[in-house]
Image (cartoon, rainbow, N blue to C red; front, side, top):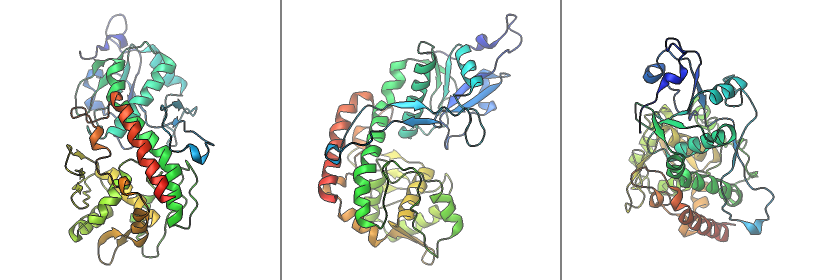
Length: 368
């Protein structure tokens, strides 16, 4: 592997930079690459384009209930919008596409992704591969890995295999939970959960909810418990101590990346330990806060502003009680993670699929 050669962006006299360079980065909670961190592109105009926006993962629709659960290959497509909600350019913009096609490499910056945030890594990589395949599948790739300072050459197989299992788990879990898990939720609540509806119009409201906290968490959430770890964190909350409840209240109220959440022995200070059989991984406080916001919005947990604690509600307990005992699986992520990359490699997809089908068959059998 070698550092990036920026000579392709110089004029014939190698004195003046003649084109901007597009640097693709994950987006959605991951900071843009800062000029001071792009020393290899000093004096070059950099266009930072988010990867985790303006994509759509295609999901099966109109499948009969009897066909679920299902597993399938992940297919993504680029949204045709040229700008996002903040009027920033994306890969559908003519300026960005032309620049990408004319520069010598695709350049992907993952420096500011947490090394164990495998879902963000997997989504960013998969969407980058969609861009590359649709534009210039033979163009070489330069990537800056998490926590690294320089861009290096990488091979297609190297980046695809590193995280495709993570994406397959995340995507297939979301699809199955949006059908089977939502059916279980409907047995516990007076709401109709539309399949694949990403607009949380059903948020539970209480008169004593502090508006600042409610808006911070619930407005930031866009899905219904469909992350693979979500149900496991809810199970873990059954064993939360009084001290955990106080810590979670404080973290929930402050809403920042330093928030620490705990729940019994499985989750300690954002470290997901599971059963203890496998190496743990560290979850981001911001992502856990969004997850607690979903629990709260659905009425699965109570945030008591008088007692300054967080606890499961009666509805939360009922929801867990209608789950099959095998759905309480604290190692559902840990057993598949590669010990070095901390992602789920493509080579584990068969094992992931087997677990997925078994997990949701049991949920469907007991809960619906």
